[in-house]
Length: 172
Image 1 (cartoon, rainbow, N blue to C red):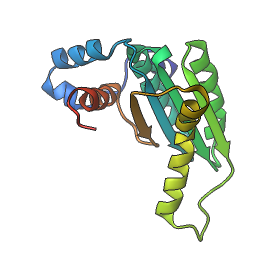
Image 2 (cartoon, rainbow, N blue to C red):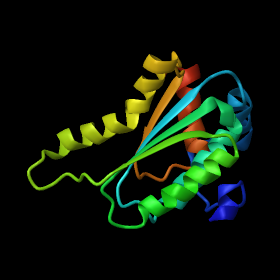
Image 3 (cartoon, rainbow, N blue to C red):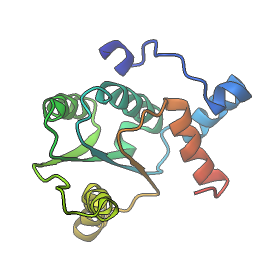
Image 4 (spheres, one colour):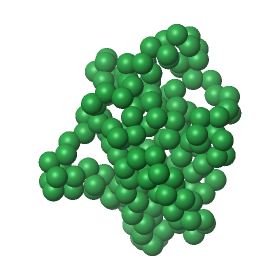
């Protein structure tokens, strides 16, 4: 998965971009490349060991296009009992080597039997979003685009299409 992480061949995915033509996706990538637009990715993970390599690959490839210095990644991991935390340590080290700003917070807290599912999901989402507010309140830093993800498996083209549509078409 390391080859895929740094831009190698990935699994084939049918995306909106691939169905409408590569020229359109090339245009979107050029439009999004290394501008002063700032992106905040908030991610919530729980027992995500199997999907983390694909999520990492997508984030690295998207950040390479958007500009590593323009991207901030906030990950909140809550109570995983697989090797999610170990992979997050690797991701943290790799992200920092390329200048990708990242904060990873882990917790042993889980939903439990008596917590309402939707309320709990809102709490962990808010925990992943907390650095967005801290950066604004403490450093005056604001972001132009905010993307929330969990253990879904987006491909790079779909993620860039989402950001582009939000920015250019007011679709967000």
